[in-house]
Length: 439
Ligand code: GLU
Image (cartoon, rainbow, N blue to C red; front, side, top):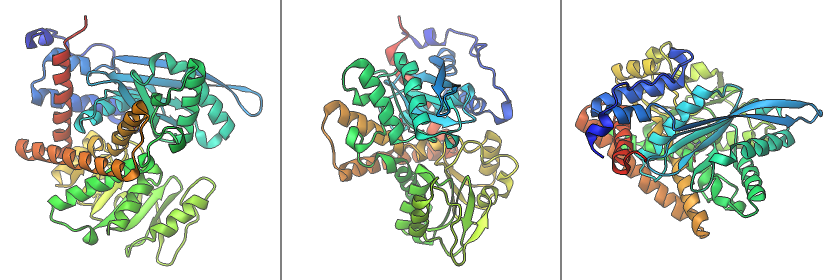
C-alpha cells in the first residue's frame, strides 16, 4: 500500500454529509476540525475521505410498552466511526435531542479521544431519542433491553463496546449485559463497560471522567505556575462528570465557587461547601441542586455561571454551551472541557484570540474511556485490580497524554485543541496506512 494509492481519490467530500444547521450542528463542528487538521498534516486525501465518513451507521426503531399499557416507539442509533485502531468504543446517550448527526459527531470524537490517550480502540457512539426524566425505571429497563437487542448484531467485546454517557449509568449497562448474556446464552461481561462493580465493572470507573478532568486541570495549572490553592473554579453540569470533578478539585485545594445543573446554579465567591452540596444532591429525588441554600450562596443561571470571574471554567454539561454570543464575555482564563463538544468553532476562535487556554474535550474528559479500557482488560482476564491500581494507571496515562499534547502545541505553536487533533488524527491515519485498505 503506497501513500499514492491512499491519496489517489480526488473527491474527498462524498455526498453523504448534510449538516442540518451548519452553525449549531456538532457533526459540522467535527468535520470542520478534521478538515483543518487534515490540511495541516497534509493527510492523504483518501485517508481524509475515510475519516470524514463513519464506517457504519445503524438506526433502529425501539417499541416499548409503557406503564400505561400503550406502545411508544423511540428511535435509537449506533454509529461506528472508525475501527482503524481497534474495536469501536463509546457511550450510549438518552436525551430528547439525540439525532443522527449528533451521534456521528460524538462517535468521531471517541475515535480521536481513544487515539490521543493511546488506548487500542476505534470510536463509536449510540443514543436513544427519549426523555428519561419522564420515564419510570421499568420503562427505561424495557427500552434499554429492546435497544440492546436491536443493536446486538453490531456490538460485542471484540467488535464494539458501549458504555454510559449522558443520562445512562451502571444500571443501564447492567441491563445491557443481561440482555446480551441471555440472548447469547453465555456470560459476556466485556460487551459493555461502566457496569456495576458487582457485575464485572471496575473500581474507579464511575469517578474516572471527573478524575481525569481534575488531573488535566492540575497539569495545566502546573504549566502556568499556578497553585490549586490560589485557583477558583466554576463547574457547569453536576452529573456524574461535573460533580466528581468539582469534588476532587475541591479536595485538591481549589476554591469551587459555582456549580449548576438543569435546575439552575449556585455561587459563593468565598467557595462552596461541596460536601454539603453532595449530600443535598444525594437526597434529592432527581439528584439535583434544586432547593440547596446556605449563607452566602446566591442563585445564578447556567448562562451567568459561564461568565463568572473565575480562573478555571469547567463546562461539564452538553455540547455548544460556549458560543459566539457568550465567548467574548467569558472571564475565565482557562477552560477545561469535561463535556463533549461544549465549544462551537466560532467560540473557539474567539477564546483563542482572547488568550484563553482551552483543554479540549478529547483530552480533558478521556479519563472515562481510559478506565473503561481497564475494565475491559479486567473482564477479558477475569482478574480485577484494586482502586489504587486503577487510579495510578489513569493518572499515568492522563499525565503522559497531557504532556504529549502540550509538547505538540508548543512545537507547532497551535492551541491545545489543534495539537490534540493533530496527534489523534495522525495516529489514526498511521494505523490506516499500516493496515492498508481491505481487501
Ligand atoms: N461516554 C464517555 C465518553 O464520552 C465514555 C465512553 C466509554 O467509556 O466508552 O468519553
